[in-house]
Length: 101
Length: 287
Image (cartoon, rainbow over all chains, first blue to last red; front, side):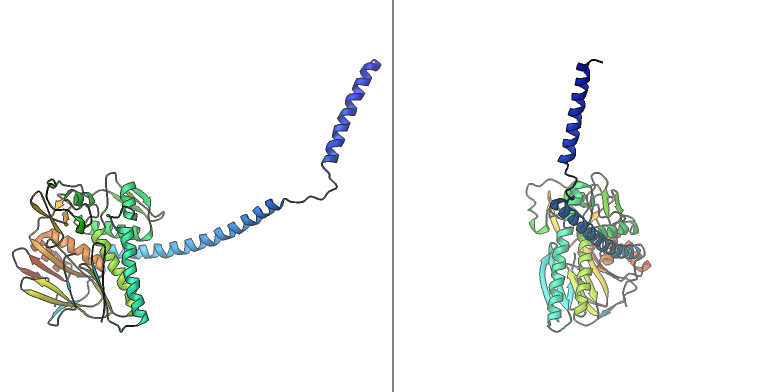
């Protein structure tokens, strides 16, 4: 190996070492890590939305259960209608008169 | 007796509340009136923005609880009456000329003759995901049963303020005391007394119009897809609710006088049948 080639290897190694050192210093590892306040706000908002979604889902589930119970009652009534109320003819004047709907 | 009259669902609505004037009574009357307006916005086939119109336009949709419930009641009634009550008569009504709110129907001049409309199409309800699906070309009319449903709902709202009667243009819901209701017959007014339940009258003596010189009415026979030809002028039926009464009244009308009386007696239905020839038939169960 000639001196000329050795100098070329040394210069390349020095350049690589310089850039590594520069990257290490630029990263400023001695400064404590600080979270972006906007990211923190988004995180809080996400948590609040998840809580709200859970509450809304609980309300929807409760209403859905109530509605399904009512629908089941209606279907049962439709399938086997309740008996008609007793009706009799009277001589009293009517309070109102039915007509074709 | 407190009374309130207003128009909704294309007819005159009357609320009767057997109570003294009070804040509770007035609030109940106002709530019942608002309920009619709310249900009309959902169930009218004449309002292009109603939930029913959207269903008829799209064929399939996720429906709200009221449309889902009324459609389920109508489909169950179709099965129970073996197709005589049918919510899929929409196109037959339109073909007969009843294509807009009754008070806006034009005169007969220049309108073409009546065509038959298809009836009996498929309606599928999936309660698990709240969807209604209509077969292609099927459209629903929930006019009559919708009025009965609204009357039942309004009566339930009024009942907290006292005994109540809701008359939705012939579909009545009654609650809380014996109510005397007149039924017009050729021989004069017959007064019936009944407590909680429903009463409905169906017939061809009102909601009539003319097409190509022939008189039409709104009671479609699903077999022919045309206004029904019946020897009954009108039939009044009492049942457990206004919805049930409405369904039975239409089914009995289509059965004809003899069939209607036979069916009313078999089902123990209180019914008054006024025939076109002037006879009045009363079912056995009416005391």
